[in-house]
Length: 231
Image 1 (cartoon, rainbow, N blue to C red):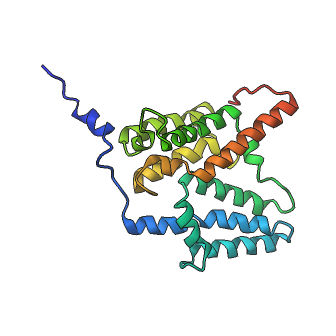
Image 2: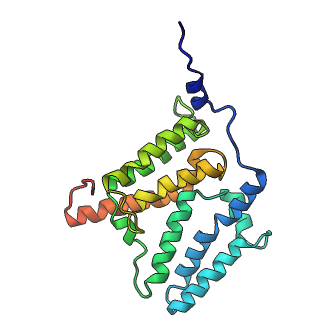
């Protein structure tokens, strides 16, 4: 008597992914750059008074909403496509810190509370995807992103920091809420591309996390602290 494993085959299938509509993808491509551009505006106007900094953030953000080749979103979309949900959440958190703390350089404050071990786990998939891009690995890791099973697995993994910290959600604990929220939005919308990796990670976010990881290791080395997880 054979066992029916069709349900497992459906979870592992990558040949018929659920993709978002073309109009939703185009809209998200434009919207995804609003927060990063607003953050850039806040950084450009850093030495201005608090209200001036807010105006810069608003103007740069509105440039992200505008369409056409005369605006930066058009060229950013051509060069880098859409940002991930995770990048949007982190950019929004950074904006809240920059605009709420006039005169204080606290943009890195959230990252300083994250253990290097969490950061290492966050950047590791990026290295695997990079190797997959050059066909170095025997597996097609990016293609797995169209599989429902990977979404379930990643959700379980990303919920671990919240379980260990008792789900104490705040802007200073992005490792608890950013990735699970991004995966939930992906499950509901399939944005930005129908592949779970694109919702969880993008090249800009990966480079930023690498910089945060190196900074965290350097600060702990200078301070003489062990690289132990902060639970």
